[in-house]
Image (cartoon, rainbow, N blue to C red; front, top):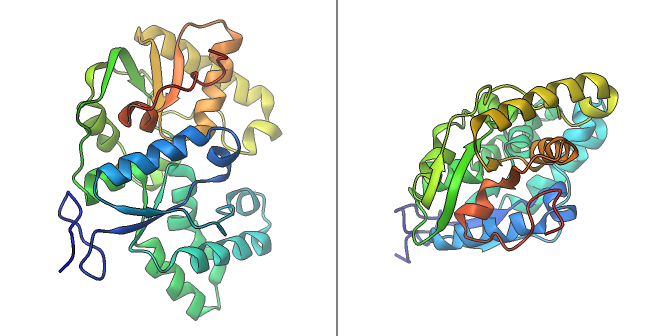
Length: 265
């Protein structure tokens, strides 16, 4: 038998788990540091990590806009690129939720593709849930001195039941005091194309979120979805708030050299 992952999880061939990292469009285009932080955490947890070059989008924009044909083709591409891995890990509850919870809806009347999707969806995880549930991993030797709070994004919380996992990981960061956020389980107003279609409603929602973040007393807002974090960081920046915004994996991996979102330094 080959080497096990540090948490005891093994791959399908008895070796350390072989993980395909699905980077996501936003991370690739806007914040690659989240992808590199994810890679470091997975390797620290004992995984063998690869980033398939042929990966593209999860199909969520097309699916949410009613273009199921394009969404189906993108999910087919995801299956073909990743089904050889023991696990697929995604640094986004939104994209992971699309692939796990909705991708199968695109294969009605296609039993072979439906079966291939189901088999891969069962092995697909948002990164913080994967680190805790599968790898039983906690960071060590990582510090962040200060008070932080955490926003639970809709897809991660409601579709994937992710709540305790980020908090368990952040509890292992030296010096980090995690304080409650009022309305932590309420939408930030992003919603993908929602914020484009309904900007006034979106702005009203995120204005309330910014108020709640300020009231928490935290100097750092963390979350697990870059789209939501960009939306909240933009609002906080426009209001000249001193609160910094980051994806939680940047803190967990100790890779916080990049300026916070919507900050130049």
